[in-house]
Image (tube, rainbow, N blue to C red; front, side):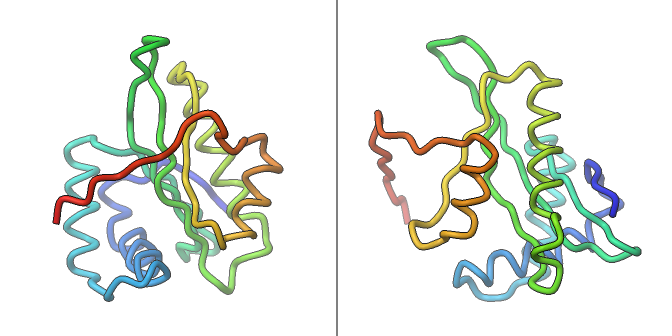
Length: 147
């Protein structure tokens, strides 16, 4: 298995994974929209995507978005998306993607990697906690839906 930072040449493979990721979160399938969205992120350097490819097949991805901590005056990365094909789960794909994200965050001298997951996604929570991620009990998360 190879894990590397995606470029525009990976658009078709990562778009298929991204579309499945969105369907997992109860969104309608939209492969064309997924490709457009990811192409914009890649071309505008608005995110960093790592892909896992096994025997020529895209089996997983993670997407990081940049952010900053005003208090510490340092970069942070938001690990916004992590997805592994159902048939590739349990083979260490997610772990390799988390390792790539952490390595990248360290290389860019980031303060932290931040993420959120659904309260019922116990498998993901177990993986994150195994990797040293801690639940924030200091701050409440708020969101203002604008549409």
